[in-house]
Image 1 (cartoon, rainbow, N blue to C red):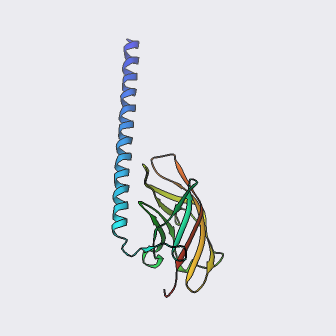
Image 2 (image 1 turned 180 degrees about the horizontal axis):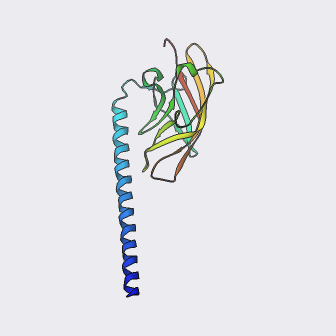
Length: 173
């Protein structure tokens, strides 16, 4: 009788594991679908973005060691963020006009997080470790540097963003 009970026990454990894995896969699949929908909506609703250029709006970084260069950016005032776009990816930094002062540092955390959208199976990342520093301000432009480590729910992976740089216009704002 004990042997039969043990077999039933392990069969139930096996079924629970299979159900758990399939639920996680479904949840990750749903999260990926939702992330892609969010990315599509963001792209459709960013008609105010401007082309990035070497002497104008600029954002560059290394994502897990790979070069990333924005091809478009959103002016920060309407967005309330410093956002750079490349294909289906974007980096979105916290923005407050009052913080655009040389030497000002913003530490990333729960209330000052970076949003990182990637074209992979995770898609939505939150950067809560790292910082942004304002390095140059004149009557037309603000420049800064940044780095962060981003994580996402449902995975133990992380993304390291290093050597980040941005230039945004503050002319006539």
